Length: 487
Image (cartoon, rainbow, N blue to C red; front, side, top):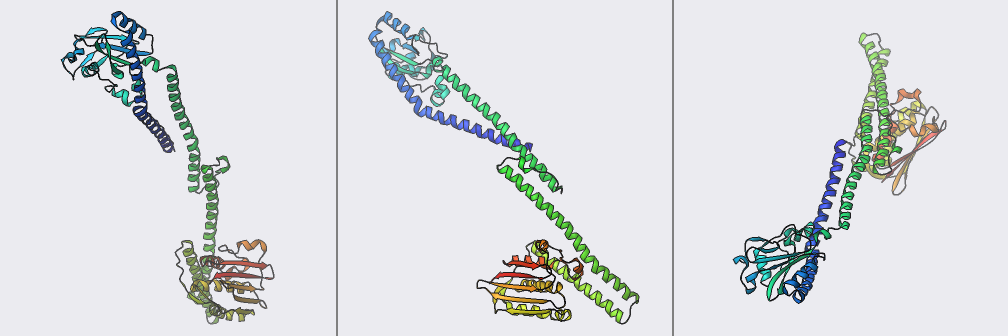
C-alpha cells in the first residue's frame, strides 16, 4: 500500500506541477502578445508627452537640469543620452552595429553624455547600435530585453534594455530618451501579497494531497488485509463494511463482505459434498467388497450365490449411476457441456421413459397414467431424457403400493408445460427450498435408493435449457413438479 500511496501522491504532485507550468506558460503568452505590447504602447505615450515637455521647456542647461530634477519625483526611471557629433548623422563610436556601452552619469565613451532621473538602474549596458538607432530618429521597444519580452518576471528587470527609447530635439541637438516604470514601485505590496497567496495555495494544496492520499489509501490497506484473510479461508474475519465511507471504496467493502459470505457457504457446501460423496461411494463399495469376498471364499452357493452376485451387480450399477451424475454436474459447473439442439417429439419421448419404469410400477403396485399433447420442440434430446427420468424416478421412490402418478404434457403455444404429480409421501414446507440441493434427501430412510443428486440435476438441466421448474407439495398428500420449456 505504501507503493500505491506514494504513486498517488506523485501523480497528484505531477498534476499540480503541470497545472502550474501550463498556467505560467499561458500567462507568459498572454503577457508577450497582449500585455507587453499594450504596456509599451502606454510607455511610448508617456515618452511622447515627456518629449514634448522637454522640447518646450528643457532648452538650455538650466532648464534641462530643472526638468530632470522634476522627473526624479515621478514614478519613472529616465535616462537622456546626447551624442555630440551624432546629431549631424555620424555613428556613435564610429560604428552602427556591434559593441556595447555602459551608460554613466555625465560624459562617457568619448563624446556621449548621459543624465539619469528617478531610481537607479541595476544595469546600464546597452548596445551602440541601439543608441545610434534612437539618436538617428528611430525608436527602441526593448527588443534586447528578451526576458522582458517573453517572461512576466522580466517585466520587473531593472535594466536600461527594458526601456523604450524615443529621439528628443533639445537646443537643435538630437538626443535619446529612454524611459520605463520604476521597478521598485511596480513590484508593489499588492504583488507581494499575490505572490504569498500563490505560494501558500501551492503548499496547502500539496499538504491537502498528502493527507487525502493517506485517508484514501488506508481503507484500501484494510481491504487488502481482509482479502488476505479470506484467501487463507479465514471466513470469520470481520470486514465491518459499515465502517467505510459510502463511496466506491465502501461499495467495494460491501461486495467483499458479500463475497466472503458466498465463499464461506461454498466452502461449507464443498466440505458437505466431499462428505456426502465419500458416504455414497463407501456404502456400495463395502457391500461389493463384502459379497465379493463371500463369493471368492466359496461361503455361499446356489441361490445364495446368485443373490450375492445380484447385490454386487446392483451396487456396481449404483456406483456407475452416481459417477455419471457427478460427471454431468461437473460439466454443468464448468460450463463445458454443449447443448445439442434438435427436433424432439416430446410426447413420444415421455412415453419411452414411462415404459422404462413399467416393471418397477408393476412390482410396487403403483398406478401411473399420462395425458400427452402432440408436441414437437427444438431442444437437447439427452438433457430432456434426464429430466423426465429423474422426475418419474423420484415420484416412484416416494410412492408406495396403492399410490398414483400422473404425467401430463400441455401445449401452451409459445411454451410447453410438463407436470409429474404423485400421491406419495409429500414434502414438508420447510424442506421445499432444499430439495434441489445436491445430496439432499427428504427421507433419510430411503437414502439407499438414490444419491440425492437427481433433483439437483433436473434443476440445473432445466436452467441450461432456458426453462423453469416449480414444485407444489403437501406432506402426506403428494408432490407436483411443473416444468416449463420454450418450444
